[in-house]
Image 1: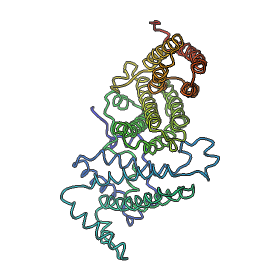
Image 2: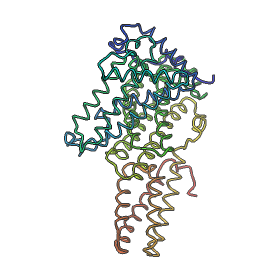
Image 3: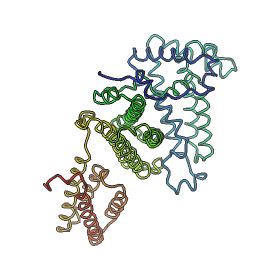
Length: 473
């Protein structure tokens, strides 16, 4: 079997139920009819080779909704204690960037050469009638063309929000209550669009939620217990979807654009991770009692994902919206992306290996790096940095300090993420003290402490279990 589309797994996981009022704007249409319209729309999108755009559009809609949930924001305790007096100007800028990306995706999905002129006519009529109090022609036709019309309504709402947010971004300060009001307006606009609500309620879709790896397919289809099969399929689908969310961040890193808008994606991932971890801890063990190895793997995965998420949201992305330095923003986005993606990949590999121990990480992900390989790289890079510090201490040439600082920064950006989370803050404090040192005595004093710190780290890393069966070489 080459792949498992989500449509074939409907018996293996619980699909979200439709909200009671979700079909009200569609004048009471039965879900079956709406489902067929959704399938027809997706067929058109797939035929136009725009499925990836549809997935990204759904992602941004979900991310914009979660952006206003304060418990998902990576605020520090200091910010939370004074949240009502915080300036939300930067958050509005991030929101504006997300809205612009969403509008661009709507245009990409809608755009065809045959209807370009007709859409321009609809745009003119809609806006002229809006200003002169008439009822736009398009409003009378909303209920005839299903999801294509829903995209038009969404496009109009986005155009209005872009104007409002552009004006708001010019204000000297944006209050907490103003920020929340924008969120409520955005939420109401989405809920009014019944087809859009239905699209978001149906989380897994066969058009892009697919399991293509043969080892994972085998793990699901060879599971005889239907309850266990359902749990396993749900877990795999959730993790693959989270990885697709993170792939959007990875593509944005390559484009070198406004990287702050990725906070929207990270907040969505945080929300989905909470649901996944709770599911693994609450429902997973009851369904996995019959399989000890798999149950232990699920416990390990839930703990590992939770710890890695804490690294990202309590450290890397803490107060991220208020970050000013461009290089610092890129480093924090890259680290957060790398940590989350690596932890999710490890989760998939761990679960699969609990069922088939002969499967390797490289069989599932081409770029997979094991914990052992990460630790080996970390120990090697730490050893190189330690020797660079000792070399500087021996020469005591102040003009070489810039090269040393550059080497420390390179380590911070490349291998620091493989250290224990508790050591990150100490490393950053040492780096800041080294940068601030203006005289040779002050610099050597800090470097002496830093050298001792690096030596203790190498000792601790050498105690990791992954080195038990390896030679020191």
